[in-house]
Image 1: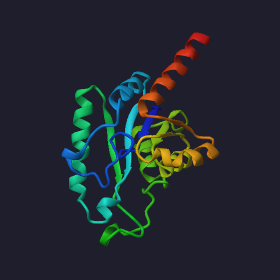
Image 2: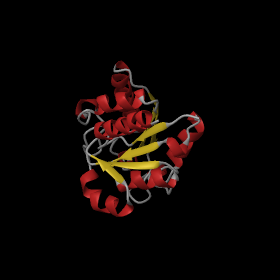
Image 3: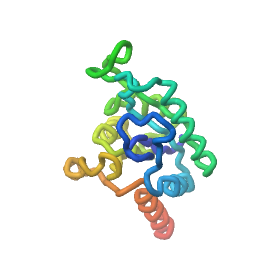
Length: 192
């Protein structure tokens, strides 16, 4: 079985911008590429799981989202980082229009996207992490049997108090989490 880092997208990988869907508005959070390189060196695969209610609300199309996700994937590929797959939830139970106004099992904090990736990529839940900037990311990770990590980028700072109550670790960024994990792994090796 493989170990994975499940990544929220907006506010975690890229700078939070309301309903981001244009390539020209995309920008990585600070040191994300460096952080992902460290995690890849530690043997993790990457899966992106993202709620995209902008599709449900009619602000942009699934095609717009796929174009942006492919752009992100291409940049990361050039840096030697492989995203196995981008999963997205285009639904919203209240604000959705047409076929997108549904209660679904894929919208975080539900675990549909995570469960699908576990099945598709033979992922070991117990050795995997869910990283995000929102309570819904944290809850999805917990419900899916993974270790959840909050990053204080994006909306993360708004959730620190709640996260502390839940006993969840938080870091300033993916990079800071990666450094911490690397140091722990090195310490374990040295302690043997």
